Length: 152
Image (cartoon, rainbow, N blue to C red; front, top):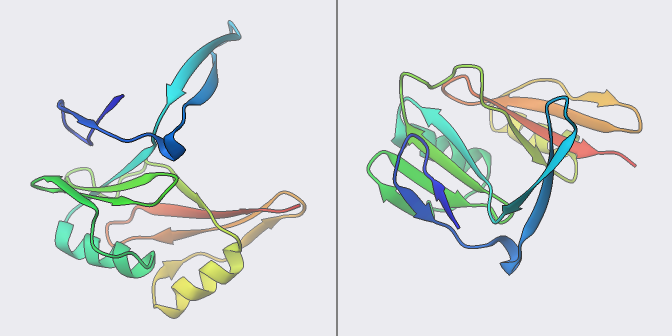
């Protein structure tokens, strides 16, 4: 299966997640029909103004090593296991509302405290009792990244 890189036409090959095939069913409009989709990988693309600064910022904030791929100029990718994080040089799009990135973590409160200790821009933890706790981290370009913990 091929996927398209952020802002590109050319498909890039991507390995399967856990070597398997994901079945995902989408409810389409009001017709309530189900569509089967084979998902093999998820890539979250984030537009940035300065790729070098953003790469360094995300490496620090998410405790990442060097990018796993640099498939083309202006694009870096990190293999985060369950999904790929892709940073794309696109200054005209950076920081605008529209992307939605939520990362599930073991403890949103702990992660928020760690990021705050790094001096990063984080909101207070919000809690919906018995459901989730979450907060947002804002990157250098104003993109918001949610961190979520499901509560039992």
